[in-house]
Image (cartoon, protein in one colour):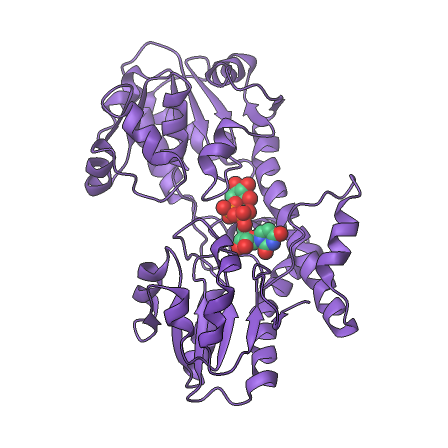
Length: 413
Ligand code: UDX
């Protein structure tokens, strides 16, 4: 999110310095090498590195900055709450860098943080280490809504820009940075902006788990949930997006943000029933896929199972919370021989499961297989119909609806 936002702000015409703690990443960025896969990012780095975009391990550039965005990670603690240690250290270091700088600047939190974090954690830490007042440094919260793999397009063409701020001056500073992006800008309080991010992700995750639950019911009734959701989603009050039933949501955001919201709710005496059910449905979906597989091929021991797709979704090499992980784990535990193919994520998965055989093509992975599980919605899987002829037995179960050939069965359809 930090790298994409920096490259996109450079594209909007601003002078940007990325501060990162890993010197290897800093060097790669300065050599125009993206450290993550994102469509369009390499072009932006080629255009702007050496010009108005650079990376550094030093906080020096903070001294002359008008706006400082905090984009550090907020990974989950073991209890599901957000770990704010990177937010705290970045705040203190930003404050220290501004100590003897008389000019006004705005510190903006872009990381996903629990409501209250910007006002109660970031603001006091920055001001204390800078030895300044709220009149000298402004504070804002500007959540991102970037989907992995499509983050550059989402940044340049968002549905809305949300800016929470402590005062009007800070708001106008941040709004100005986006002035060439022609979309509604919503001005809120700091904590409302923080809550908008959590609520957006929780609602999208709810849509998916809801569709999965309806899909599980449809499956038993021999109804195609995709036909159902097409009819449902055309109601403009509902909307057609994020109704694709399947093996459940993964990634670095939905599972973490829903857990963090549940944990936050519990600290204030709330028992968030819907949010807990969203995670529970999501946890059960891979088990349903495996149950379906067992009803088709019986004992898994010694069977050759092909897993198509390892990334948590298409167009990324990211495997964080990928639904392929619990599925592969269970297959291996039960003595199956797992052969996998993913256009991008094999290397990452190899670190987790070195005993899996990783192939260079879907066809090779399918050769002689007893069954195939589709775990990621890679569009290219829709064009490999002939490769399934290489299977020993044609048992194909889709966790994501993406294939175009006959003789497949879906987890919820
Ligand atoms: C998400 C949000 O969409 C983005 O706004 C936020 O800022 C970051 O988190 P991302 O995690 O990159 O983005 O992926 P997204 O496209 O939202 O998909 C998340 C997961 O949900 C994937 O595992 C995907 O396969 C699954 N999904 C998505 C479904 O199962 N069904 C759907 O209909 C849509």
